[in-house]
Image (cartoon, rainbow, N blue to C red; front, side, top):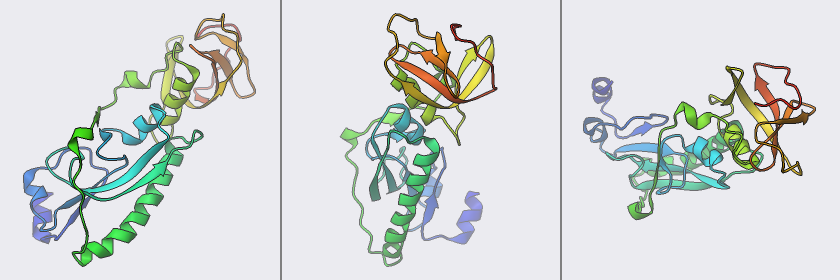
Length: 228
């Protein structure tokens, strides 16, 4: 790939959706550098799975950032950055769509400046940076001792187009794609107990509050009063 790109003799390279660090040979090849993209408010929240973590952690805002790539992870000078609100009803799909829309608007704004070499860059303050780690399978597992809000955030963060949150029921892995928080439930019930059967699925006691499972697979006929 590097040899093919070198033959094209590019002035600039755009790198989107690439999860590995680029080498020095590629970074230094184009005269104007390599533009990277990261859906987070740099210098905060560099690293892996930015859309997922922003939802799982319950943030109410993220960003769409274009920057000049260097040997670090999302650490180069910022070319363009716009904030992106996160609504409580958002899931991975809706947030992905909103970030994409904002990013397209940014490209339409800064691309003519790149053509004229009239763009400006803003260095990141590395003292304000943190790096999100790579997820593992255990990060997507529902623990019913979590609060209802934490479970809700986990489910919406891993919903389509991602892998889905999961829990185990009688050794079967159940994927959860959508749920809702249920308030005003008895406090003297243990986490993981099915309180009742709602209109879409079971209502399960959490560490605080409860969760109604709305979309999950495989479809199982859960029973009230049993434990997950």
